[in-house]
Image (cartoon, rainbow, N blue to C red; front, top):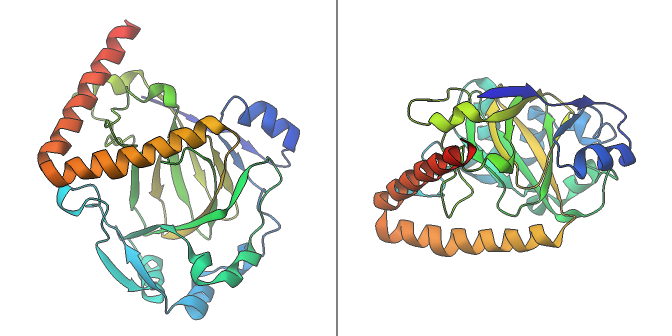
Length: 284
């Protein structure tokens, strides 16, 4: 597996972004896309704890993909207590797809939707929190939108793969998931990974990574911290694909997990290996 650095750009114009990154679906790190957001100077651990610490939040751990706890929260906690937990040191507990703006609508004025492209989905603003060394398994976003992820306070490592390599990174059928570890690739178990090229970046406070539609991403919290994801859609195709993914996940995947449990997970793992083997044969 080869990991190449993602472009880092400052003062990137709308025209250049559209021509060089949006149209060809190439990832890029903006160093200054969010420079005018009040949130950059305002949203510290202490400020969020003091002003919104009483919120009750669902927390997810590394068992989120186990058949018995499939996509279920491991526990709930006061938001302020959770922020203190991840500020102190390592934890595998994460918050994802957290629409804090519904619970605290005054926070909406602290961020700005970029003008770098059209099609931003202004009703979909989500926050993500994680402890040091916690990871987000390799996946692509179910709704197939472009994602602009802005990091706050600390650092986050992001590894991306093109959708062209979906089979070679062992995509689990009927899901948007892969369970390979790009930081520790097991070439004996997953030999197709030797033929995969990925892209890597570490983003810090105030930096934004553009993850194109359908691109796979693996995320590791270098330090405990948080980010905001804004989404944009410039294609009817991705809207249709997103709807299909939602049906496939809620009806087929969750339904079969309910009926078959661990056997459904094993079937997906087996099918992912078979599909990767076929992809290698086609390349030979």
